[in-house]
Image 1: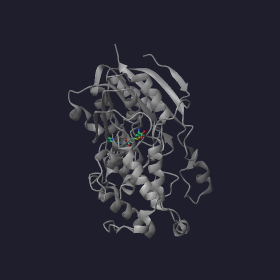
Image 2 (image 1 turned 30 degrees about the horizontal axis):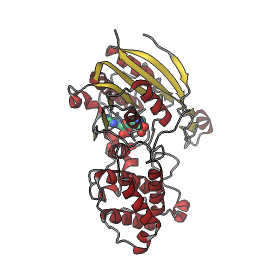
Image 3 (image 1 turned 120 degrees about the vertical axis):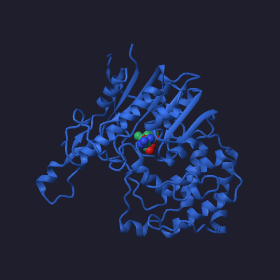
Image 4 (image 1 turned 45 degrees about the vertical axis):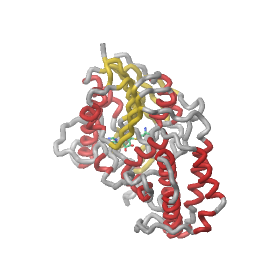
Length: 412
Ligand SMILES: C[S@@+](CC[C@H](N)C(=O)[O-])C[C@H]1O[C@@H](n2cnc3c(N)ncnc32)[C@H](O)[C@@H]1O
């Protein structure tokens, strides 16, 4: 096995289009996405990302003139964002819409708000009213599907901006009561700002992807669903652990998508928190196969062990699907992390290497990359709520500060 352990610096070079389009948990760094696409994707290639998230890797692959682009994600928000990112909207129409907002007609006309969304838990009255007005305003327009996808993604980001969700992390936490009582975000202003940003990014080359399929799907079903259509390159960043204990993709997306399905033409983009149990490791395995023993040093018994086992068992199925979806000459690139569970790192890099080796693949490159743009704390205390000082003192653990980029091709 040829293995190189390189510490890479991929933080230079031009930033990709739409870097700040919509926040999404655990996005691949846009410079890394561009660098990987430059290295692996050639004109005419077919590319798959079975955990496509916000679509950064696929957008970077598309920019290298890949021919066939397939994105899969279990999360409807991911599918909306990836489709929107790869859409070619009519920018003149978007400019006209922005001008309409800026001339204030929408505020003054007080468009009759839709009353379909009942929950107020995450929104104050002003946000509810303005978000409903935006829905009603969009529903008055004749918009094409690409325009709708972009506006739907902007509405999704705006919904989060105008909600009580704390914006400092992806786990859903409400602002404190004091902050909620003074919170006065204008959804219209956020929507306009995001639309303006999108327009400002649209003068570069339009996306040209004609042979693109982005769909809601389960990476554990890859072998079944993709059948005989194999890929030249699989570029992906799988989740680091089960969704419930990591970022809660489902719960966070449910909030973002509160209003989007009320827009005519975007009805399919609704999300329930049950997405979290459909994510890898979302359902606890009944049997413990001791998959984790080599890769995680925590106790072999108990719920935490079951969670790690369930995640690794599901992840192994996805690895088999990835391996069998590659052409004989194909390359798989997986960006993985070592998250900490129960105080111990899950060595997902080594687990991935061993899975692919057992499937007849050779690790051709192993890069370690510092997460320099990470916004989250460098340490968390897993016993922060304990009343025992010594326990609290022992609970401090480092959060993830690096990721691993693993490149595989078939052995021999
Ligand atoms: C680390 S994120 C991908 C981030 C993405 N590369 C980006 O730059 O935005 C992992 C993704 O895996 C998805 N996921 C989790 N379980 C899945 C499954 N069983 N099938 C397909 N996607 C899944 C999550 O919804 C999430 O979008």
